[in-house]
Length: 368
Image 1 (spheres, rainbow, N blue to C red):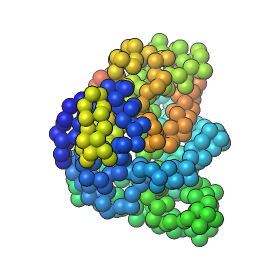
Image 2 (image 1 turned 180 degrees about the vertical axis):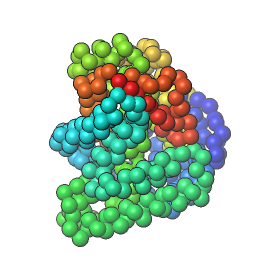
Image 3 (image 1 turned 90 degrees about the vertical axis):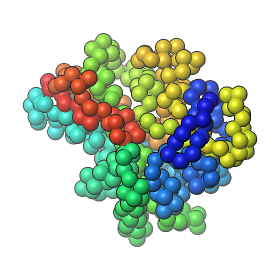
């Protein structure tokens, strides 16, 4: 436990697995971005938040509980399982397009990692796929560290304006997609709020795209450069879900820590966090804590259970099942259809996405 300097203020940095997990489950810590003392890591963050309606990720109980309960079913086992055939078709279409290159080289970031989650989120929210390049550019800019304060506010304003029009179009005749079902459900309950649904759509769009794309990229890169692991999973595809849990722990794709502010005095790791003080909860460090994982700096299938890559507690990622399913289908399809992919350049020569808060590669060229 130690104080750190951020863009604005000096919150506490929390790194041990047990401390991070406990803080994430403790209702005495607030996720409300508008509260005084909430850590600000980037220019424009506070202004962007002030310019938009609050999202579920930045709410506390009971408001957070109510909104999360409304959409929980959309990301539950039954709904995600029903989406699997469509996700498989999306992934197969990506591989069909790749194979048309007849040996490559093909950049798997542009040909696989980006289009798959884009198409899935379009399907989920009922967004025209023709618009995916436009919102891909905006979501990337939202994550980019060097985006200026004014530009960050502008990005969120553009996204909210787009989603406002999208939701208004659906209100006239709600379709059978997540937003349409929410419109019908909330109208029947007499609880419909247009701005609240736009805010939810914005959260799901941003949270469900860049992160899944990055996770696909680094997982595929690892498989292509680890012959033993690739052959092991090709022989026994039933182990892919277990491998995914270790990929999630090992890579911890979201490079920005989870942030909270204390509602009252709380003791964490033997240190008293005073009311109004912020905490930076490093799930990256927690997922490499030797007290929690036997070989934290090694990728070992079987030790990823209990990782914090999706957070923990009331705000644990609501789309975790969907993200796992997308990644599983991509890896299964890769090992079934193209186990002969090999990197067209040494991995260590490829550029990492250093400028955004999501781990990944700028490109992953392959041949076969």
